[in-house]
Image (tube, rainbow, N blue to C red; front, side, top):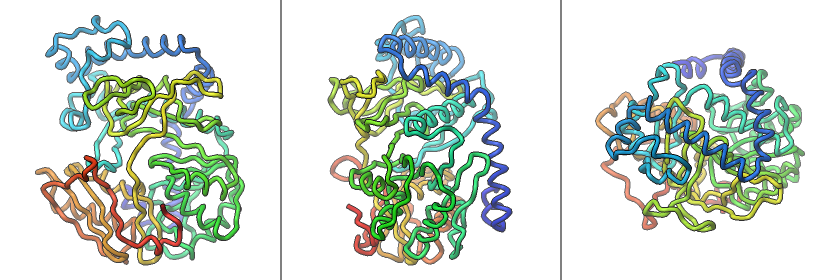
Length: 468
């Protein structure tokens, strides 16, 4: 409802609503506690291996007791396998606890909420659904604050201090796709950010983006790799440079050719970070850009094989992680579909925080609209988050004028949900492209065991950028 009011409001009213929203977020998730945690993180980042082990062990044992005593799912699970919290004495004992899958979380969400929290006091979010099936999750306020603090520690590594100007170009539909003239952005004055639309990126509009960025003079820009690559490609083709201190990317695999193009266009290093809506892991790059540091204060991470056994250090496996902060909805040994490996050597930066290789995830295609707008696949995940009844999804662009939304649903999905999906998707890609919804019994995987979430059949030459 609030998003609909925002969408239908004049530009100046949107500006007011956005900053009212930002002020509310600031009150809830920043403030004194945020600054205290950020200061603590400045110290813990230089912990020795023994200090890290002690920190994680204490946090883990505290989480286990909390989960057994207040979370119905874990009370039932531990009792069913005759496991007591006292049987868990160290991190080595974590293997006594069964793996937690995405489907288990979906089916038992109500049982995973701690009785110490009212559901209404928790913040809700969702996974993108790029693996085909979005997941609703909940976080307590501490987790929200801690996530912001970890994010700003990453920015400090990149040379950006809290409060500095940052241009942000993510998946928020801050400007109607019907708009054909500038402005394609909004100011978040509360956090000193320029929020720019991801849905108006074409060669006609791009100079307006360039002019605005030069006028705003941000110290950094943050966005999806494919979105920043679209802007960077335009800048590089036209021999334009917008010097920044850093570019920050997340939510997609950052490819070497994208990093190179973005770094050249903005004359700065690119800092890629990895996190999940489930809030079990947060991994960030330091100045050396050699893998990603696991923020050990945030979660404890394992890397397991197909049989859920630990792999040797250096070998690839599935990333499995336990949140050490989210007491509202504790997720213990949550198994992701992402593939990575531990890096055994200590980083040249001197921090002993564990490191992982860059996450191996699928390459997503960019959707291109008839008007020439190029839209990152991550920007298209949000409409699917609004529908509870979607089990799997896939986007297929057959040609420049036609997109098919293929979905697998459960019994709760209805025509109203279908209309909500269509309306929100059209709001992002525009009304000049035909969108159809196909409800299927299943979506077949590829031979690799995975399936691509976005399949674009539009010839790459029509994109005007070199997508590899």
